[in-house]
Amino acid sequence: MRILHTSDWHLGHILYNYDRTEEQADMIRQVIDIIAEHRPDVFVLSGDVYHTSQPSAAVQTMFAEALMKMHLAHPEMKIVITAGNHDSGTKHEIFRTPWQALGVHMIGNLDREDMDSHIIEVPGCGYVIAVPYAYERNIPEGFFQQLLDHVAERNVDQLPVVMSAHTTVSGCDYRGHEQATDMCVGGIDSLDVAELGQGYDYLALGHIHHEQFVHTGHHNVRYSGTPIAVSFDEDYPHSVSLVTIDSHGATPVVQQIEIKNLHPLVSLPPQDAVPWTEAKKQLAEFPSDNAAYIRLNVEVDDFLPPTANADAAALTADKECRFCYINTKRKREQKVDARNMTVNEFQTIAPLEIAQRYAAAKGIGFDDDMEELFGTTVRMVQEEERVQEDQ
Image (cartoon, rainbow, N blue to C red; front, side, top):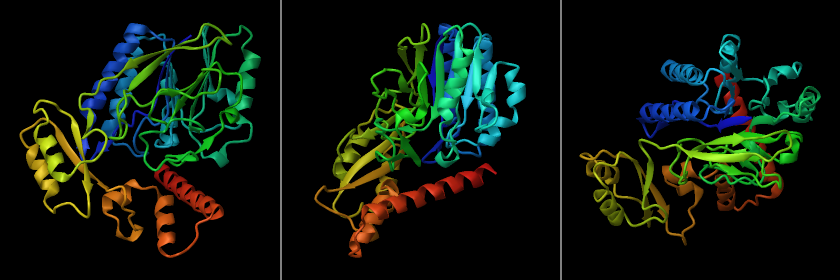
């Protein structure tokens, strides 16, 4: 069985007030070309189709048209789409039945009663178990293993088994994600891979934007990563994964296929911050015909000049690049009180660290129990916001 695995398209994403429709449409065109060339048996998109749970009509139309073009590029291919934590599971389910007539399977919500609703058989090739994002406490204990066991009963010909999930797996490389720790990335708590059961040949993961195998000793647990960068900190190549599995129990063979971005995200300088005068010089020297988004990494002692953003915008007025923002970094020896942070600093620091700094400023100890309680509260608020957006 051949699987084209991708995730985290984040359609409708706005980058510092810049609409990204053009580059996202070009990404979709590249994916369709890959389908036409390699003709996989299954296309798997492991969550976060959209950037918000309330995408515009234009963004939903772009995705619907993409599905139609993918189907036309290879009509025999099964298409499996699961909802991620950025998506509305309910919206995924609305047109589930008519989509199935074209071999498109939209899985938005967990169905605890009908396990077959999560299992897509690819005749003569294998099985895909599609599990959408769900808040951890809403997932029945042993649910993943029950699905795998159910497929094992049906899989008398020992065909390959793929499972798709949208979650954080312990030990993954979450570089590029804001407000991420070993315990939680993007509001999703880390799971030990053992909690996802045994019996799959390939675990197609979504949520983490950096493509990677998660090291488990079996070389079959993989994040495909997002096909185009969502933030400037995703300073690594982006791709989709073409996966070949010869038979049940065989080790998957993965080919990364790079996706090029019409408007790459570029930081000046790429790594360390520099003084404001040097940052302006690098921006002034940036090639006029490079249609990149630009972030400036600037080291400051106190605050930037009040005209800094206007000066940067003026330097790019006659260039094709798009100035986004100035990422200020204080000198390493400086420790900033939470009560005196700039707006940019406040937005880029995890809520837990802000709480810790505030507690330290007040002379209050922040022990492990307080950290756990605070983290639980933050995740409950995030889930409540998602539920409200989904209604």
